[in-house]
Length: 584
Image (cartoon, rainbow, N blue to C red):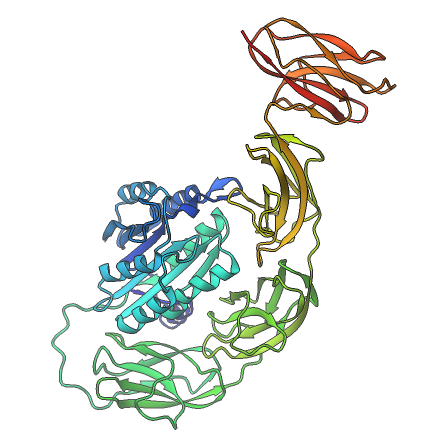
């Protein structure tokens, strides 16, 4: 049972022609924190996750021993809220689905402790262990997931963690990606239901079992020499196959280093376990190297072979300009290593610096998010091993400009209003209604993603006051545009020039007197009676307005709130509105 990285899997299949199999032991660590109530396109993330997890379990191989740990789902503010929902066993689809559905978001995000507990359940010190973390946020319990994952990788037999970041910001991506990077796993971002489904499917497809022979005879005396095989030449940063003739000890390493380094030093390496072949990543700098079979216990090199690491011909392209926070198309020549990245950083930054990035995989093009700050940048192709930049292209990032529209006057508390924006810079940007005077980049918890739309309906807060419609970029959480308006009491009259006056209450069927102060005009005007939430130009009774300044209206027989409206049909405007409560 073993989780391979995408690149290791591809090379292994290319060499052996063997089909991918399902892993024996896998533990899913599932986010049940309160932030999972956040919405994507109006649907709570927890509902999206339940549906996608259900689809995944329906097709997961029953030969897999699959377990489930949830966190943050039972108690608010409790960093110990971690529960083993399902122990690793052959998949019981119905029981697993029920366990997922029982998770109700409530608390914090102790993901570091949850990953560690999953590793312990899988006996990661003695057995290969695979964890899949699904999270929509970063650690909130004062723990360091990067340090933990490095320790698990160092002390485990073959510990691998794959991370699916669900609806995360760039900063949150970086805070979780280290878990996968430190353990040789995958980090896959997902922004909506379809991408979450694709991410889980992608992770599942790279899970393969290790070759285990529990009936193997007792090991003979250690061999003093091991034969090694590797290509004579390989590109910098490229994954390449290696094989060895014998296994001296399961803890032995196969590593690639410069010939001049001491024998107990190690470069990129793999543990031999019970295998006879594997893959290594070539160093980032060209030159002659050695592949060595190393015994960490005796610090002896038991086998070696030479390999020539040569420079790769690589080019990367990007547009000359982009606006802050926008998605930009980038491309590169043939990828060297599936775990290499294409990133955007400040011009002249050190090679090790990494901004927004994507893994190249097997593709030759993709999209990056432009930084939040205007300036001169570079799109770079950076090797996974060693972090060396082998190609770059300049790009100027200019400040994005967006216009926002909303209510022109006061609106009633709790009502629905239409808001709009000139264009979407990035589909993950947010639109929200927040109190005026809030922190400039605040969007509260009821924001909506703009997607590819340019307008949508939002619900106005229930508390009267001054508010703003805000457009805030996903990249850097920058306020790009705002539109102020006033929220008044849910029963308050609204005037846009008519000076409409009506009584506050009436009896069923009673005639009431309605008056207005606006002067007569040739426009086609009406005084209409409608349901409070009916469309503006929909009514169940209406009378034309001439030169008079008042008229009688007969109220409905059914008790409840009704709205009297003064309408200008020619201009398609509501010049005044007031509520009359019909009481018994």
